[in-house]
Length: 148
Image (cartoon, rainbow, N blue to C red; front, top):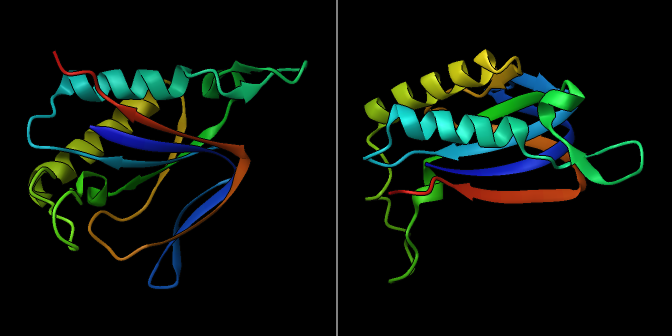
């Protein structure tokens, strides 16, 4: 599993002109899944994201987590995170999980985030989405599960 997380002052997802999810303060998370992702991987990533200390405390230091800030997550499924661009000019997406598997993983991942007490807004799996947000900082991090 891979995620690109961006600390955001605002984020929203539009599908066919309709807002499917929007947040005021928190993280925009682009998440991608591969063939061998497990429940353990989803749990690890959710814990990492909600407890990562990337929000400023009262002294201006990145010392607080999404949970500490009572922030929200706009979670967007993004298979292109597994695009391999090493050869040729067209990305190869063979490492991305098949849509039916990825959809289950995405839905479960969002459930786990909610179980951590975080408000979760989402895009629409498999849809053409328009994502807009205001990156705060900017703070953008790439996370990947450590595989044993």
